[in-house]
Length: 150
Image 1: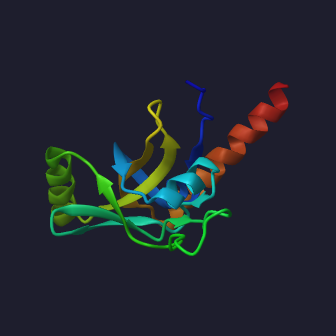
Image 2: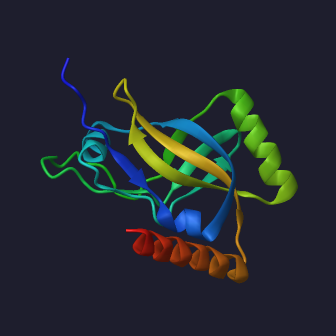
């Protein structure tokens, strides 16, 4: 079997805007042309967020570009996609969202070793502006130390 190319799409904006408390690995329900676009790393997670409809978890605003060799049956780039988690994980997330006012954001998308598309979602809490300034300061200090160390 041919070795699959490792695809990993990160959501840097989510890590900047939110404080990550807990991470989960979820499968995602995709159509044929969507998975082909994912394998070509044509995904944007920047404005994506997750929401519950009943007891099922969905992701919205995840942009998967139309497959360039697709025909008239190509997919919608911003369609709502279902995330696949166990009932226990879904129940745990749902109770935390209702009780404490947290949000769920996709942090990373990748192709697993078995060839399935996976999304790493995070239970997160929004950062205040002073927290964001602190993150920028830490990043600048780390960059400066790396520069001086070379």
